[in-house]
Length: 440
Image (cartoon, rainbow, N blue to C red; front, side, top):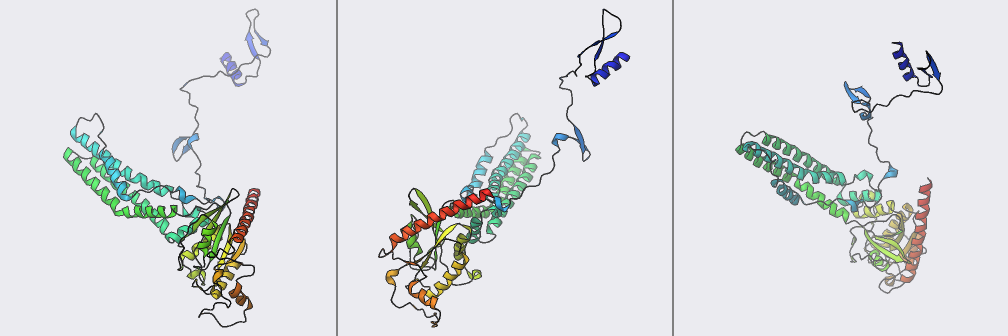
């Protein structure tokens, strides 16, 4: 017993000196610097996991993880522009249903089932399950891969709201996901019924009924899938804006000649017609100079009214100016042909200039070949001549404005030179802003 206790103590404390008996002398003697180390036992039967009680059950400690709350994206981590080009390809609802039915009917029963009734109910349950999955998987893909609007760049968020209508984007996505849940519920229900069939005939009848019910459920909500297809096409057609590339934004009242100048300055080919709101969206062109690429946007015209009364086209223009790092080329038409009086243009100009005064700015008076010696007055203009700034504006436009004519090619060379200088300055601003963001 004493020998066993000594061994136990040595195993517990390997630093103790070993006492051994010698065959040459009686009694124990010391062996200096001799130690006993624990013996490693390799065995599959040894249990090495630690367990703890969780909700009344023994659960391995390694499997017990603290619940982690999903991290919400902060404003600094919002996605950059370009999310619309990453949208998944949406199939028409008819094509989704046809493909699902075709694939489901190819499913055969599990091999080795000799009983006819069992084989038939196995086949029916598998086909209904396959049909349900073939319909639900693409719907889940759409719901998960269309971006959450609140995480989009403010510019693209504005495009969604102004192009599709406020709330329509989220509503369609919600209905598509609701359709997926209904298809899964109906599919599982009828697959379960089919699996409980007692005869071959009953299994066949339940399979036919199940396919019919799933098809009816999907068809009732198929319109929402087609609505999502239209949304994807609309958003994917939106012009892509590079935030790191300088952008020149042409602004002004409707029909003042912005689109004509975009054609002259860039590769963009907007529609040019003599009626208001020719530009029905944001049109993008590019200027290539000295191996550098700059962006030019043609925006819908602005009318003299408060923001609450503006239509979505006008709000698109304000969204571009508010959310994109742009240099502004403001276009004035004092010839009286654009449909907006010089007096109203002056009011619009003063409002926009004050609101976006931090942008690089260039004023251009278009159609200078049509300017008359006496300023154009509309019937709505007041006869008060006390406003000297307005009177000067009616004759020549803002101070320092460049007069151009696309028809007679007047001032176009100078305009291109000034625009190039503005865009280079805008490039410098962008680079400085990027460095500041890195430092902060």
